[in-house]
Length: 517
Image 1 (cartoon, one colour):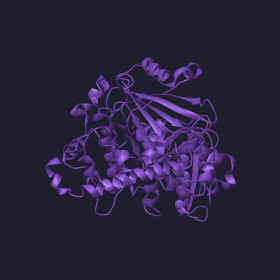
Image 2 (image 1 turned 120 degrees about the vertical axis):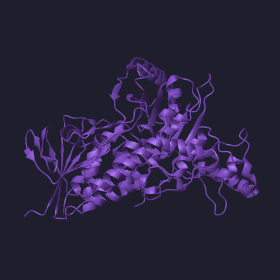
Image 3 (image 1 turned 30 degrees about the vertical axis):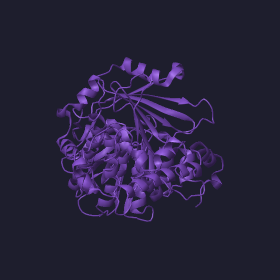
Image 4 (image 1 turned 135 degrees about the vertical axis):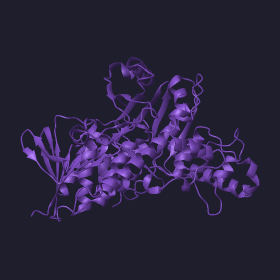
């Protein structure tokens, strides 16, 4: 009897190679003789690369995999990301008058016995600083185009929380190299068919050059095609277009005017009449994409919006159009097949949730992996957890849209109560009288903390009325002193931290001295 567990990952890209490397590291390959991991991919199928942004969880993932931060940055054209700057989301721009707010990765400053959020809420709305500026130094640091860390600080650490922008195809190559080092077998071949059986799910996959391949667990990383979980097993996609309307993206990359052009250390998300445009700064180019709803905007009009955003540089640039159906499979582990990445679902590029969901899925697969017994033993629990995570992310993304006061049809439709999930409606009603708190959420089912909701709510101008209970917050002077300290620390940090461009250039030009080991 063969006691070896064989895992076959079908599809490469970020999802496939991240799953391969993570499972190999978690299961102890190549020392573990009871597990075998193979990845099948075809060079004929390119990488979608819908988004090139991450959430701070990626630092722990890369650290766990044993990938040095400086190497990752050099080989993926990566830059640091300290959050997202939202422009024109709250209201329609009026000439040169544009509203903007910042969603930083750093949590709001907390002092023992002095919760600051209520004191900010009780300040005069006309004179108080924006929420993120009042609550954290990261707003000032990012706006000053400073890096979140210094050159001599160790891998994946620094005074401020951060993630990265990166080139998706390059990241896949880095992960593939690490997976090979960890003992993953790589087969480059074309998937030609999938045979199923009535009991386990997948019987075997058929390839052009290597013939049939069999495994105990099949991991579907075939992207939107969902060759195993969707086409072979027929697991349906649950559409959420009645909640999140965007289903198209038009993308391009433009070089900088100069190699010395300052680098932003946040994603820029600029709202337009029927969606939004991302602007991501890599080391050598900006990745830009117009996200929109085909029900509210034609492809031609989306191209006009993207050209207007990019300016004259767009004249000679090719645009790439990506169509997607926002939604997810409620059962992503069926029999001996589990989906990771786009095969399991995709919501939209906002807040970089694509990579976050890959990380969540592979972490759970590794933790729940059955070393003996039925291979589908964890399926029910996995499906419950991943579906709940998708639902909670949907609520968080919808929050960005339903609070807007823009007057175009797309935005009016987003304010329609029928399009807002019941759970989110309930929370919004409660948050009219108190700010979001940790007991609103179950940590293991969430990708975003309560303070992430605070940044979006109060950045968009949502009102929480604490005035009837003003007497419950008597420490106004102490709070004002802390607000002043945050301002002072922010100003000092903009002087102490290096410019983002300078640090990225140093990492690339002097790799042996870029980071302490």
